[in-house]
Every structure is written in C-alpha cells, then in structure tokens.
Amino acid sequence: MSYAFRVDDVVAAIADPVRRQILEVLRAGPLPARRIAERFPISRPAVSRHLRVLRESGLVRDTAEGRERVYRLDPSPLTEVKSWLAGFADSADVWNRRLDALETEVYRTRRDRRTAAAQDRAARDTATKGTATQGTAAHDRAAPGRAAPDRREKTA
Image 1 (tube, rainbow, N blue to C red):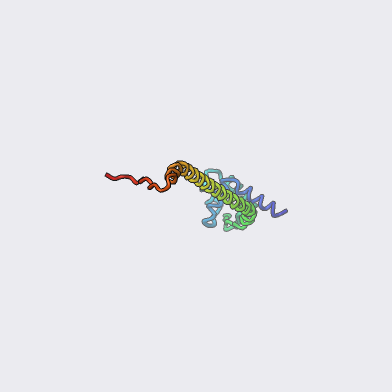
Image 2: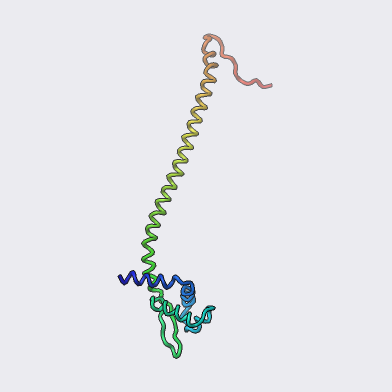
C-alpha cells in the first residue's frame, strides 16, 4: 500500500502549477527558500507551504545552511510515477499497433475493391467490343471463297 500512497503524494504534489514551476527552478540547481520565493508573485509563506508539500512528497530535500534552508530537487519519486504510467503506455502501444493493423486492412480492402472494379469494367468493355465486332467477323466467314473486305484506313 505504501507504493500507492507514495505515487498519490507525488501526483498530488505535481498537480499544482506553482509546485511544478518550483521543480523546474530547482532542476537548475539548489537554491535557498528566499531565492525561490523571489521568482513567484505569491507571498513567501505561500511558497514555504508549497515547498513543504514538495518535501513531504519526497520531491525536494532541504538542508540548513546558516540561517537559510536550501532546497534541492530529488527526482527519484518521479521514477515510481513513471513506472506506474508505463503500464498505461504499454497498453497504449498495443492499441496503437492494433489500430495501425486496422488501417492497413482498410487500405488493402479499398485497393482490392478498386482493382476488382477495374477488372470488371475491363471484362465488360471486352465483352461489349466482342459482340459489336462479332457480326462483322460472321460476315467475313459467311462467304467462303470470297476475299475478306479491306478494313484498313485509306490514306489520302
């Protein structure tokens, strides 16, 4: 159960846009609380509350240096969230592959239908031409011993 609670704490912590911005600021390196607070238009106590939430979730670590608290990013809790999310990405990959296969089948079926339709048209055209020229061929065969008429085009 601690795994689920830890993921919940981390996700709840990064749900707030100010806390996400604080994490981005700390990505560049450790900073004292006052330097972090200077970057935001909210009060220092509000920034301190955000830092406390981040600290309790394990996303930042703080150390006392003189009179200041210096905060450092600790991205290790994000790996648990990442591994939890990976389970969804794997199923997304499965669905993406299935949808890609479906798309391929749709294109293949369309292509096959177009090819079949073109072949049907060609067969009909051939059959139509065959019946139209059949009478002429019958006439040519009807008179044995007679020379076939010259069907070549005459040039001027």
